[in-house]
Length: 126
Length: 366
Image (cartoon, rainbow over all chains, first blue to last red; front, side, top):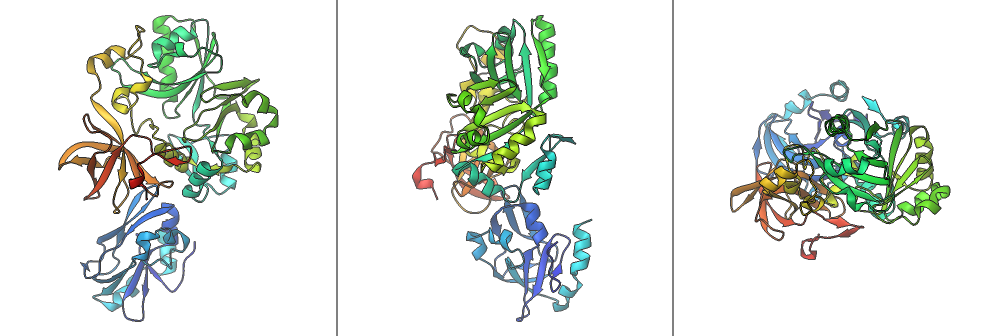
């Protein structure tokens, strides 16, 4: 399983990366894109929206099926990756580069409480 | 789970395997979309050995099928000719859709769906008992089925199987040749040219490998579904089943109600008439993908639901088949409830792509 060790993860197959400006980028894992197959539509949440951890905030659709994207953290959406609206296949090509949205977390330490790579790998292969 | 004779090959090729009606089948070998394009542009090869070949032998084979099927096998005059038909119950519900092949007066062949094969066999045998027909119903579990489809499919098939070229080159669409124990039919489920081949299971791997070596791309059931949907072909269990008549499933063209011939379900069809349409939908705006069971609305009122929906790799937009109230016609604009959002879709004839070409009006092409 392709799994960068500097990222944090959720059981619902999102990855989270802390950026230098304090925001956290969110995408879906390589394992998730592989399960979904060819991705044809990504709907990310719009900047300005306040979200709660565990809330469904967007959708990824493959040829096969639709799948929700969840917010791993509570906070405010500060950016959405609009490039994915016209090129959703980038998620298949490199899931860890294809960030979907950025969130400014209410609690900056919350990201450290998400799963690390080893814990995610265990959860995803369970 | 049941396995086809090509199961080991699929696994070695890294296919993602799924349970399809109790059969372990390849969904794709990496990219469903690339497999789809290979069939539209060149040639793809599909393992469809989960489908069942049923042979009908006996002096009354034709008479039996004229009563059992909604389409009329009397239209099969020349040996090798094929006919698409529904098989109905007494209420006019679709038990299965199938292709019937005529080879000799005492030998017809049916190719039926995997999920319904056992039910079909029991049904056909019960009809034989009830009608006392001189016909034997034989399930050919010893045969494998391989489809090669695409504009270059026949060429690649002849490259792989040069000894079958002479017998299969003259085949017109919807006809088949029986060469010893190999049946080659110019039929398919993709909207492209090509062959479907039934052959002894023991020889399936050799045929498959030869086709792949000749340049045909292995394709899974995922691409098979997007290809058939683009071609506007119904999928049994999704676009119709026992609770739907062929008239309400867009298959009136396969039902012979004009002649005096009686067949199972005819009385019910005549009594009910057509109640709904099966039409195509093309999504006009971004915002998601059309999927089965989504609601279709016109002026805010529910007028039907999607039976099959997907993303069309050829058209680069979402398309669907939908069962709608009568009176809604191609060209109309409707709304579809896609995960709580109402998105506009254009009603079309239920056929989106044929022979690699888009059939939707150009102003709606991407």
